[in-house]
Length: 66
Image 1 (cartoon, rainbow, N blue to C red):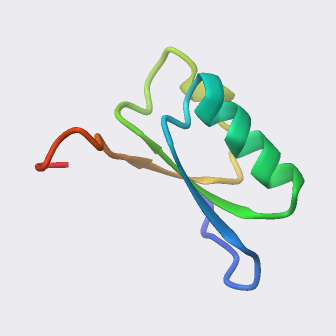
Image 2: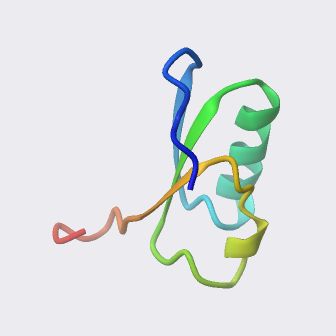
């Protein structure tokens, strides 16, 4: 788990373990941003695809309990 760099811009991306969310994570990293990747479940389908230099957080935006 990476700790965001306080000097860089910070992006928080939901649905970060697949599809558009994963693409956004990669784009932000390529642009020099720190990234917090939010996902309902850090397990498969594509959790291994999330770069290791991001902070991953288990979070379900549909749930008040998350």
